[in-house]
Image 1 (cartoon, rainbow, N blue to C red):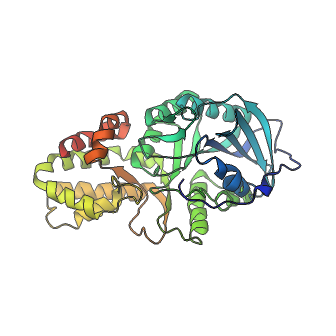
Image 2: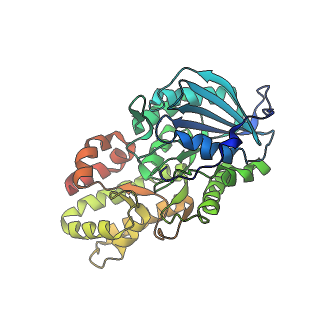
Image 3: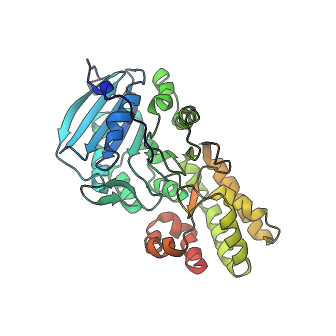
Length: 377
């Protein structure tokens, strides 16, 4: 998250509270937030996110809960939200929210305390695509992709929707990492920087609050639509959000592998074509090295020098696989070419610093994209 609008703290006073299905009977949906405010975002929880959550209509068949760790306080609070009311229902010792073990604990705790037919988990913090997410300033730690994967697998908790209220997480490496756990169906994230306002939770989750029968795919698209409803009325022009079918990404891995291999095989012939495509394709506004994958493919295909028939076919197939996996994308006016998922094409200092970490991601190895980047650089 990256720019700020603050709402009235008067909304934060707890009121009379009745949590639906308090006896522990399974409800239809649980929406659980992993709120890492142990950094410069802590004011945005009380100032923006919680007020928006309180604007969601109460529904006895939906749980909305948050595990909240703030920098200025010692300890972690479990917060329940129902309609315009909220309360802290339990407190825990201070935890490192930049540690995958804490994410694992959170997933296990939520699934035990709030059983439901469907689960949406939102990681609320800073993000840096495949490199890391959830920065904890007290512990000087953040969750790396292998940690996130291990946390999900070890918790064994199935997530119908995994969302990131964090920058840059609309990234194919992140989506594929989620797929490899076998425990995530859909992912919601931004190719871009996310303003300090973060997710407009009221617009995003009111549709399911009014109709709990909405499917995970519908809820994922609702979140993108709600994002657009909110941000189209602001001055932000370089923000966007996408909903991704994680299973579709995983099932297309051979398509991405074929494309990566042929890109690698033709590196000697097309180095300048690749370099030009990287300059001209849509690059995420907050990064020089996260390129929109579908637009990259279209940019390559538009170059008459990109003539190898097999590589052109593989590139077309890659673009189709990405477009088919992206259920919805909403980009503001300055991002007409954003199609929903970035790919890391690290060069120069970014490659030197992060390149050694890249093989820790499953996408880098399973597709051969890491080998391509080694030789490209």
